[in-house]
Image 1 (cartoon, protein in one colour):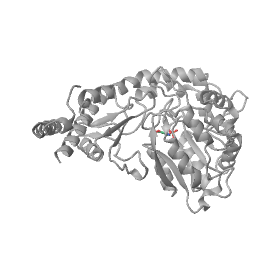
Image 2 (cartoon, rainbow, N blue to C red):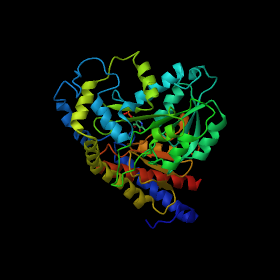
Image 3 (spheres, helix red, strand yellow):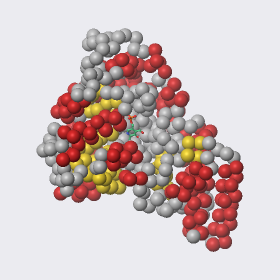
Image 4 (cartoon, protein in one colour):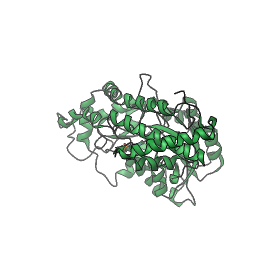
Length: 425
Ligand code: PLP
């Protein structure tokens, strides 16, 4: 804790410390660890919380008397849509309950936008000379790879504690009609944990855009995933956009992937009723109905929106100590050394670690050699390119607490070693 910043150490002292860390790293390697902090997955203990799903639904009919085993009902079972409309602060008619992945819904929307255009487009995006997207960084790797797969160019802006640098966003979109959209993870962003403030959301909703069909892809994957009792409320982007005269600008996504089962939950899309009709119209060409049995199972399991909130409190009890442990080890081992900064997220699934610029790849490589898998450096940036080679995303939810401790001790050793190597030139 009271350690001295590397910059304040004498050359001799630095050399001694480098030798010490080399020895510590050799010891670490000799331990033959096999630990993984790469992906934000729920732990088995979290998944167990939802095992009553396996005995549901208790009926084959939904509240309207529809047989959920059959085809139809593309928009999803009404009672589940109502429940999540309540949780996402939208109207039930603005919500679609779909399959098990919101990322798939995002991909489908982008495909439809490229192939057919939006409700307010002059032509399909794919027929534009160039399509570009604003990407706050660091951000969610799969958002970026999805855009890259479609040939959509990415322009980065900085992510602050209250959301993207909205002045930079407004300046970019004001007179470049090729910029068609922006990714936003509004609540407990992946990986920075930032929560988009009401002011930033209002500006994004209202800002003039050269593209008349500009879209905010509002990925609220962690809307309900609080790590403290001080639960952040997401800005109501649909109402803000509608009030600003841009009702079709936002498309919201969410899912129960980290509420029930990551592989067998339910995903949601919420938007203006015209956008919902647009989405369902295109979806209808490739689907006759979603897995309504799973919808009903989820509706019965939760019982109400309050049931979802109570369920999330059980997740918090399991994962909050893991986040606290990440902070404890980093503080103990790196505090005062001036070799890293990290956040203490109040929700979501990640810790954002910034190490000495130019050393993130080295830290990840050192950790790998010592048996600790970290998300590759640069992953949280478009084209996997972190211009400063400084950012590392840590995902502590999946391993048991004892493994989080071991992995973080190893990470701290690697961060310090890489910083000392750099200081030594
Ligand atoms: N959006 C964000 C920001 C995520 O971090 C993740 C998973 O890590 C997803 C979406 C994936 O969601 P789903 O499981 O609903 O496809």
